[in-house]
Image (cartoon, rainbow, N blue to C red; front, side, top):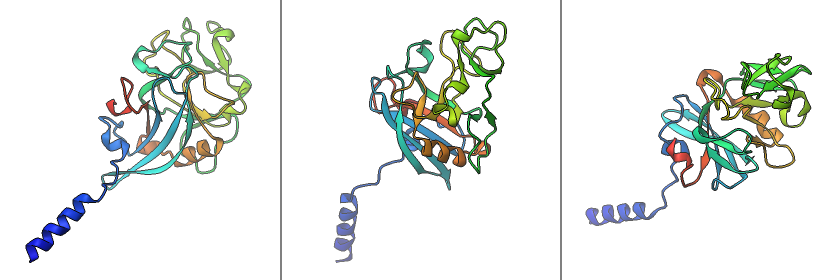
Length: 228
């Protein structure tokens, strides 16, 4: 009788739907830290999706928050093959070097936070020694027409995190100035954007000592996030 009851309980347990495995558990690499942001689109042509931020505690990843996301106007492209000026968001796993903004850092922000001034630019000139770097005042070899004057984007750059795409060893022509920032009016030029309240929550959550990374990808296909 006990055997029959045990078998019945086992069958009932097997019939119960299993909780979904958290996305970070299905990824080959999450950056080695205990915080992670995932930015996921349905496919490479999508311009919208979801940003989720995760914490790893006690050996398990748990979802801390999520928000609707926007991507490049021309969708997403493999980070290693992306070309500058294509209005695509690069897929891959990237560090988050520092935060910045036109507005003051939200209370509780632990990240190094650079305040934007009227002299703040992001150099995107492929011929410049400052390519893919923040500069205070344009260097002589960095053309304004090939760069971004950060103070001109009062809405989008109220708060932002630098995404470390093409950052440590920049490859000319691959792309520069990829950020996680506040939504503008529509799709981005290649960044990932979220609503203003979500951006503030991410900044107060992110802890540089826990080495957060951002993973950008799609649900399937060659740019699937599970590859990273």
